[in-house]
Length: 338
Image (cartoon, rainbow, N blue to C red; front, side, top):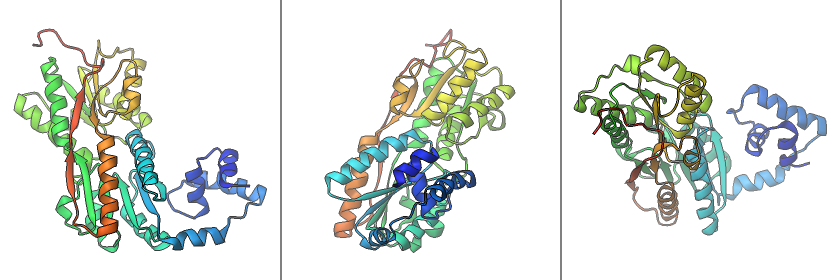
């Protein structure tokens, strides 16, 4: 029996089974019980010798993904793995809950796996500031900036989230929308969502649009289900909204489904804009208007910087990757708009 067999019999993913077998904490008790029940029933015995050799090899690269339902990261992981394989580098991917302590987990993996380097996909800069000093291998943080932290072994690549969000609000205003809701994310000041919210606030003020954060904003996790429920709460408070800006495409999908169940048409009754530019956004009905992050550029530069820093111990690099506002079919032009 292999880990793949356990995954099939338990209904869990291979990565999840691996985390259970290695006693990692980021697994729900229900999932842990399902996996261990299969292990006990079939008498599975892990190959501890192989595990020990892998832990001591010190040749691999760890990809640490913050959030289990972020489709942007799914695209990034695929691109990063391909690039590492082309450079004859072995990579292991770990998935964490979006509220988990990714730096603490990375410290644990450094002790157990002894990697050559780490790619963080997403992360809370506050946690990096508090704990990263314990990590000595080269690291790159993708989709958030670590420039202000000034760690010698931590580089970062990000999109200008504030400017991208500002352009979304300006675009909606140009289409005649004045009552706009903002959906999703954690608004702690170290989070990506906070920068997007601040970009929205600046543009509301600049254009003289009404904005009451307590009424027009609704935080939620980056998932369709959470966004569905958050949309219902938001419209319960503000039934007169004509547009919603969701801080990820995944959340925008949940919003569109919620609106449909409320018998509201998109975009005829209410417009929706997402963020990320994942492939699914091109096939949604209606096709989603969204901010496209350049995942190819993020992946290529992230891998290139990490490998150069592993080989040559270069200075850290911090870059902002361009974005693009993609026009779909999910935004209506209101009467009187220019």
